[in-house]
Amino acid sequence: SWLELSTTHCYGNADEHSSPLFAFTTGVRHVSGINIYTPNELEVVNGTSVRLKCTFTSTHKVTLQTVTVSWNFRPLNSGSEESVFFYQGTPFPPNMGRFKDRAVWSGDILRGDASITLNDVRPTFNGTYICQVRNLPDVHGSNGEKVSSNSEFYLL
Image (cartoon, rainbow, N blue to C red; front, top):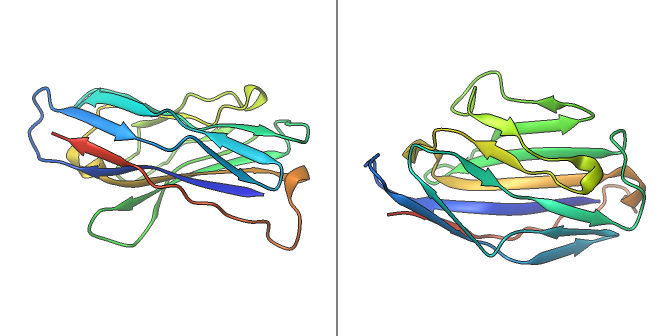
């Protein structure tokens, strides 16, 4: 099963001096044996780091070989998604684009943690972040199911 969690929808200005960034997220999403959890609130200052938390539980055994994680980003003014991070047995950070050298794996699959950290957060990071977690034993049907949960970041 795939779980899709939109962790952020950001709005902001270009001021890089002590601008707080707030995120409000939903609690739990469940699809075919997987639950995904997100924090209720998150705060970060523009120019610092933010941990985008994405944790999960599965009714089936979780192993490094069976879990795949994809983080994607959709800018505010565009429907085009871009890859932020990919994990399959080992982290694959982006090698180009706005998240190169800024997106870092901070999760632990065996503990049900698919989180990443974005370093040196900028207004160009404004948009929607989507965390997808797949544990192969949980897949039922041809393609599994997707659930999306939206939340917003406010760069003040």
